[in-house]
Length: 170
Image 1 (cartoon, rainbow, N blue to C red):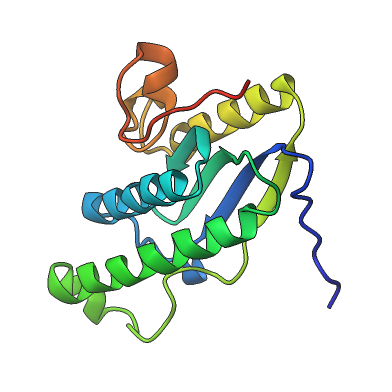
Image 2 (cartoon, rainbow, N blue to C red; image 1 turned 180 degrees about the horizontal axis):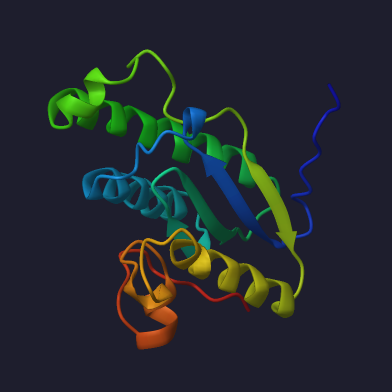
């Protein structure tokens, strides 16, 4: 199996994607989406990162993140996935019992690994933000990107808080 290389020493932003194990819809419940965003906030603050945009879908997550220091992205994603996994499993065991009975709680919450794309220009950042924000529309979850509560689209279109401080890159 070829080794994946993550380029994390150019101080580029990173467009990240990671999915739920077996593409399960573990993020259907609003409480699960809140967990993912809460851990995103916590980890960004801990690593002094910025997030120009995100979307949490029922079975996957996209985010653009940037860090002021090199070699942060792998640690960031590892912590984000580990912490959110722990909390989502607790949610399944205590509040989403019907769904929990339909799956093996011994399975992981997230697929192994993540996809990373270096965002090296303002144009590429705009492209990735548009792609992310249109995900819920393409999936048939909402008619307009701004209607999906679990993305940064409302920040850009309506200047509303979205639960994650949106930090534009310099």
